[in-house]
Length: 290
Image (cartoon, rainbow, N blue to C red):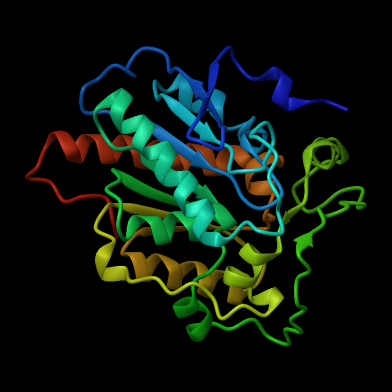
């Protein structure tokens, strides 16, 4: 099996906060020292960790962006915790801690890039924490989006105290090879049942409500699209936070990060970041939102 996490470029890491969150720091090539260029904070989804960004990070480094990859409490190399007690709000505190560290170090707030559960966490965080931009990659949906485009024939199941990691027994998917799947299988871990009960409609949640009027930063929403409802949910999320939208048809949820077409999402994000940077240096130009 090819372990992409072991192929990542040289980087540094440190533990932050009282509960020892594992933060990995990847320094970009030329361009990362530009005063107007914010760093990037990558927020992983459920069951995963910073390793899930292994294919992404080198591209952003090559484009000159400094990247910080947080591991939420109990994930990957962060200190082990009792997952029966971890809540959605605990994860929000973890991201706040990471942003505080980044602002102290860089003197500017980061662009936050959130995947799946990390996406709904990042949306909620953006209501109250200053960030330079918000990128959502196949984000878990908010209560407002579910009200507009509900999941059909959903049979919610209540999560236990912890949710076991997905087995990933399949041999391939629409955009993932067996090697891609095996890589994930090696690192996937359990997840907090309380967190799932807060945001996941598949586990009977009421959902997380997003106060869109409080989100003022530029945004980009990328969705894996395999049917019209997927597309409608992605567009509804983009409308809610006033962002640009890209639907990638024929891709899968995890494939957007580690599959064979991940570069399509990466290229679009890098282009969006370039426009964000250009607009920030020219105040008379509109920000890249819609």
